[in-house]
Structures are given as C-alpha cells and as structure tokens.
Length: 392
Image 1 (cartoon, rainbow, N blue to C red):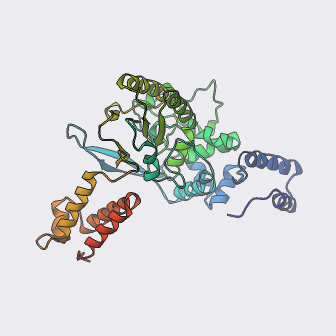
Image 2 (cartoon, rainbow, N blue to C red; image 1 turned 90 degrees about the vertical axis):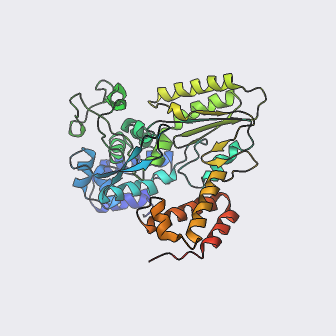
Image 3 (cartoon, rainbow, N blue to C red; image 1 turned 135 degrees about the horizontal axis):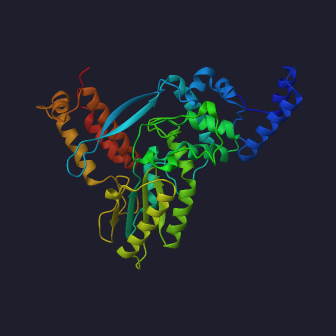
C-alpha cells in the first residue's frame, strides 16, 4: 500500500476538481487519525474502503447492512470431550473471499500497527507460547481462569469503540465494526440487553438496522475464524486488562491473558487459598462488567508443591518445558511409525485419522510446537522420523 501524504492528497484532489471545503474536511479527518497513530491509513467512507481493499462497493455495503446471504462459511470442529465424556464441537465461521480480502487488509494496514495491553500475550508480533508462559515460572501459587465463548462475547459496539479509539470517524468506525463482526443466532447470551441497540443512547442509521428473532435490532459479534477477530479482541479487552492488572498488582500477583486464558502467579509466602478465592471473585466481577462469563469448570488453583502448567507448558522450573504427557504421546507416534509391523497406514487407522496425510500433518504440528519450546528435543524426534516411509 502506498504511504498516505496530505500534500499528495491535496494536489490530487485539486487536480480532480474537488470542492475546497470537502478537501479541508478530508484532511482534518486524516489528521485526526494520524494524530492517534501516524502509520494508520485514513479511511473517509465505505466507498473509499472498497477502493483501498480492491472490493466492490455494493458487496461491502451489503455486508455492512447484514443482507443475505451470509458472507461466512460455517463448519464445526471437534473439541476435547467434557469431563463426563460428552462430545463437544466448536463453531468456526470463515469469511468468504471478498470479505476475507477486506479483513486481511484491515489486519495488515490497521490492527498490526496497534499495541495491545502489556498483559495481553497472544496474537501480536513477538508473542509466543514460550514467552507467554515464562512470567509464571518458579511461582509458588498459580491461578488459572477461562472465559466462556470468548470471541462471541465481544459485540460490535466494543469493536466500534476500538476503531473510534484509533481516530476513525463514527460512521466509518461503525462500518469497519460491521465488516469485522457477524450476526449470530439466538443464544441466552444474546438475549440480554447488552446485545440490543439502545435507541436512546445510540443514534439510528435506518439503512443499517438489523431486526432479527422478533425482539428488536441486534448486534453482531466477533466470529471465530475471521483473521481480524484475535487482534480486535485484544484491543477490545484493554479496559478489562487494565482493571484486572491493577487487581493483580494490589494482591502481589503477576497477570497475563492469552486470548481467553487468564493466568495469575505469585511467589509470596503469605498467599493462601482464601486469598486465591477472593481474587477469583474480583476477576469474575470484572468479567461481568464487560459482558464476559467465566468457564467455572476450568478455574484452577495450584498451591506450592503442585504441578504447574500454563498454556500446556510446565512452569515448575526456570523456563517453560514440554509436559511429560506430550512427550509420551510423541514417543508413541514415533514408535508406531518406525515399527516394522505397524507403519503410517496402520497407525493412522488405529489412531482414528481419516487419512495418512492427516496423521502426517498432525505429527508435523506436534514437532513445530515442540520446536518452539525445546528445539533440541524436536530435532531429535525429527531425526528418528527420517526412516519413516510415507506412502504417496
């Protein structure tokens, strides 16, 4: 993308015969955006956004109006079974090509140039699982919490506020928010007042109202599967992160958030389960203030001497390490793949993979993860797997 310059814009606008007052207004809008962040691209209208992203204006307007058909492909992926063995599935919504192109542009040209809260350790440049888990190494006490339906709990008003905070005009911020959110189906969460437009406090744009489910105008949410959702969620959570970071500091704890995973730790000798319970209550309260709800079944308190795992990594020592069960699983894969009586085809069948290619990609993913945490161990595993004969 060509860097925006006010002098170039003014010269081009004058050459195109634009009205002087229109030029002045556009320059004022651009200056406001660049005052917030000089690297952000000015966007003057939805039509301008269409030109910047190489999309059809009518198609973008249809997306913003929430016209049918749904610009997302929807499918489910299997989640880890619940504690009682019940199968669970995660809904993934992937934007169709035109919308995907626009969202990728927003990621690269806007969101990638922003900075999330310092406690947010996911979805930004330089952040890795290793670095995210490192602050909690050698802690005496560890507290973990999880947000239920994280992306779907962040509505389009929260996304609108993100773009407004970056200096974009109200209408453009609204249109950007609509491009990055999706109108979901009826759920208990979306039946609450937070998910209804308040006509008293929010001026109406008649062309953009969406009436669904028989009880008034509704808002969209961040879709899980859109490239914009992770970074927008981080920015939308800044106020929450500020509040929780302050709570943690008051109680002598470190706080990090990796998407929907909240982790607290301390080395204090005075900390106990009573204080942990008090902290959990305070954090749950902050979640409620911003429309989030905790996944209570995933709240954990690890006391001194207990095994401590953060984001799937052991943090008992001076640096994060791969847990024993991860290594045992990879060791079993290596044994079966290199055993004369087994091999890739039989192993894929016995482990429930739909194809040998699926198994191979799974192994590659495990090795890539291991390489982030313990490169020497990953290299050793790759060396052992070199003898495997994969069928074409």
